[in-house]
Every structure is written in C-alpha cells, then in structure tokens.
Image (cartoon, rainbow, N blue to C red; front, side):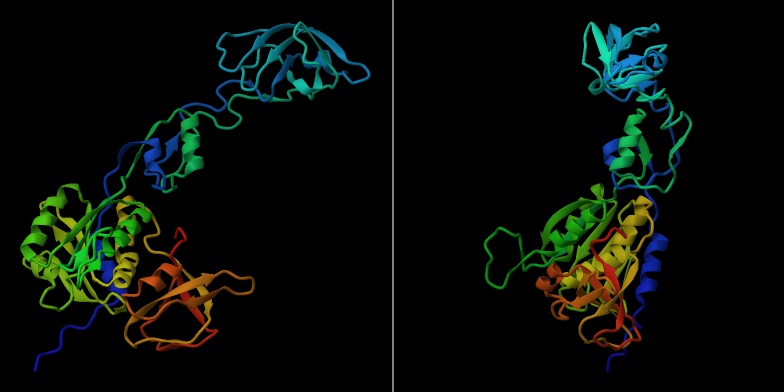
Length: 413
C-alpha cells in the first residue's frame, strides 16, 4: 500500500514562498509613453516653472487696466492697436499706456500690460479697438509659476504613471523617466492533443486555449507576453523549447503536465534540474503547483495545472502578484470585498475554494451570483464571471444571503 504524500500547503504559504524569491527588476530610463501604468521609482522634480512666462488666457487685447477701468456699453473706451502677439512669438514686446495690443491665447504678456480684454468684449478692431466692458485688474493673465514652480515635486516614489501624470511630465519637458520595466513573460502550453485555434481540429484533439488565456492575463497584469505554440508530451522537446525561450524571458509560465499522470512532462523534465519544487496547494481549483528557477539567469518559472479554470485561478493567485512585485507595484494581491451570495454553495473542508461569480454593486448591499459549475474545465462560466467567490478552508457551506469575500477580477486592485 502506497504511503500518503505530504500534506498540501496553504495558498498563503505558497504565495509567501514565491514572493520571497521574486525580486524587483532594475529600473532604467524609458520613453514617457512606455511607463504607462508603472510605478514611479524615485521622486520626480520639475526642472522648470509652469507657466514658463506670463501669458494670455484669452484671445483679446492686452491693455493697461487704468485705461479701461471705466469702460461700459454706454461709455466704451477707444484705444489704438499698436501691435499683435501670437502664441509662440519670442520677440519681447513692451506697450505704453493709452494703447492696446492684439494678443492670442498662450501668447506672452507684453511688458506694461495689467489686464487682457476678451475679444467678445470689443468690436474686434484692427487699427483701433472699442472696448465695451471693463476687465478686472490682472484678469486673463496666467502668471509664470502659478501652476508649478521649478523644484516642486511632481510625482512621489510609488505613484503610478497614468495619462494625467504623463501629460504633466511632458508639460515640463521630461521625455524619459527611470522606472522598472514590464516583465517579459513567456507562456508555454504542453500536450500532444493541443491544436492552434484556426487550424482543423482532428480526432481526439482540442484547441489550445490556455496559452491565449494566460498571455492575455499577463498583458492585463501589465507584462509583455510571448505566447509559444504548444509542445508535445515529450520531456526532451519541452526542455529544448524552454531553453530557446529563456533568452527573452524574465518569467516563464507553463500550463499542463504537473499532476501525477504518466505524461506529465513538465514535472518530469523540471524535476531533474532540482531547482523547481512541485507540491499540492490546499485550494480548488489549482491544487497541483510548481515554482522555481531555470537557466543560467535563474529565471522564475511557474508550472500551472492544465485545466483552464485552474490555470487562470492559479495565475491570479500566484503569478500576478509576482509580476506586480517585479514591477514594484503594490499591493501585490487583489483586495477582497464583501457581497451577499445569491444561492447556497458548498465547499470541501481543508481547501480554499474559488468559485466563479458575477458581482453586482447595489445600494444597500452588493451581491454575487455563482456562475457555471464547479468543473475546472468550464470555460463558459469563467468567461461570464467578473469575480471569484472565496470560501475559506474551514467553511463547508455558504447559505443564500450570507456575506462572503469576493475578489473582483476587473478592478485594478
């Protein structure tokens, strides 16, 4: 009689083992647009003030306020127009009291100007202008440095680059910033039965969905994904394909071939190296897991189960946190929210159960509805879900209407 294997380790213990070995990628200068979604590594200081110079907030006329302080529709003020300043003009312009200068939005304010009259409060004159409404002193003048001053901290370490922040950096002339890169993730599936989508499906074959599912998940997590055509159930072929891919990988993810079957080639091939550990995790789906390093650069490798739901849940629980740590993004794992479950579900004791669910935020209490069956091959239910219902190791029954923890899959942590 065979002796029982070691006890499964907990989800938390497996994740801790992974994160202890994952290190942040070194930062380097990158083009501004390449940093979208990545964290700021160190405080970014503004090299200039914004605005750089006093400029007009309106199309209109630069004037000396005292000259037009009494202007009204009943008593308009007439002033000679002595020049025009367009945006981008670099010539320094000075004006005298008793005159007006035609000015465009963003154009530098001439010396001596103390207000700008919008064109709609004038007759739009070219040689002379009739001003029928008095401005407030200083009105429509954007002062140098009123938005940002040189030396101000624009972004702090830990902030995340987004569209608004990238626009801010560009506005002060910063075109490259130092940040950690997106990890390059190689996605590999194994199985002689796998066929590429779009090809003819032969007898006893199935389409390779895992590599697409996991590559998309990697991209959604912010990584660069390289999907590899599935390898057959042959250890030597798998090792050769893996070796070829390591040159472009910061991290490798495989699916399939990690259980206890006679054709579990990933486990067979990597066990020989002695650098990858395989064990069972007390979770459902996703019980068989492997993690370690391969190659001369000790590239981290995750070996996930072959069933698509198991592979996806495993990616969310273990791979995504590792990718976020490599990029320096926190928190590493998704936060939990609470919701009322709409139907009664059961769970096996001693395992953390992850059920697919559809979360609906509602006034007075959000709800989550289980979607699809419990089978780890059911892609239809996975595609309809937007959440994972988490049932703890000690919970065997969650009754309809009870409060359960939920992971929101489409929310950015």
